[in-house]
Amino acid sequence: MRLFNGSAVALVTPFTSENQVDYSKLGELIEWHLTKKTDAIVVCGTTGEASTLTDQEHIEVIRYAVQKTKGRRPVIAGTGSNDTLYAVELSKQAQAAGADALLCVTPYYNKATQKGLIRHFTTIADAITIPMILYSVPGRTGVNILPETVEALSAHPMIQGIKEATGDIAQVLEIARRVPEDFKIYSGNDDMILPVLSLGGHGVISVLANVLPDETHDMVAFYHEGRFVESLKLQKNTKPLTDALFCEVNPIPVKTALNLMGMGVGALRAPLYEMEPEHLAFLQEKLSEWHLTEEASL
Image 1 (tube, one colour):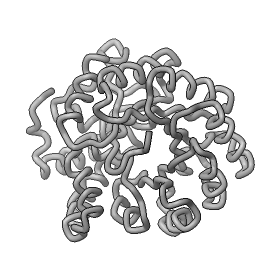
Image 2 (cartoon, one colour):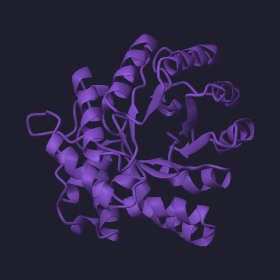
Image 3 (cartoon, one colour):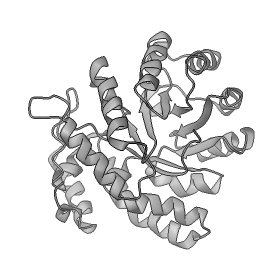
Image 4 (cartoon, helix red, strand yellow):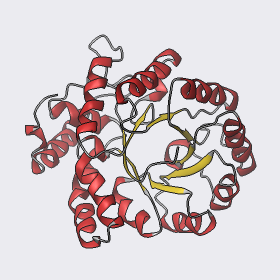
């Protein structure tokens, strides 16, 4: 499989009132994205609350997404861990469940060295036969994948891309300068899609796409079609809503937004908690500007 170009939604995981995974609602969300322009489905990532899914739930969500999607879009499974051997096992199980590719975050808490990161990701990649996307988000993990480390890892045939969420555009440029042209660079920040594309990026793994799937896709597609003014307009116009979706830690606002849109994705799992009133009002205001609170229920 070749990795996608465009917009991949970092999909939320819906829960029932009994705090179980709501597979029926998950199926509805996937079907909704299949009617939209979303280019790939990412499950069990940060936005999918993977850190509070049980091992069984984690694999079942992946398996369900694969079965529901039926090859109509690539399904990318989050399988990162701070334990290399655990990440290997989870990645092998995700591949067996039918995932098209993996998204592997840097080990958190351990704070591995760059040599440790190379060994960690190489060990996982050696155990699989589907593409891996590296995920660098030091704001979450405390560890940055430096450009020279990305360059070294890009030599592995299974390591084929990176979700770059450092917010450091100079680092993105240095990565782009060092890696092969077919190595995929995805923005991990919805307010930096266009800047990353301008440096040779291929798309975004997006929180915004949960609520604006068509616009997020179009932002990337317009740029690649040479319609730069239209792409920039979308980047500018979506910025206030993006700010609202990150006014508290992800995925608190986006899951709240989907519920405000009538999609019924359920509550957050502890320790995540409901939004502060002033943040909720800000989110409601920005959703209303896009008429999203009027979105028909799934």
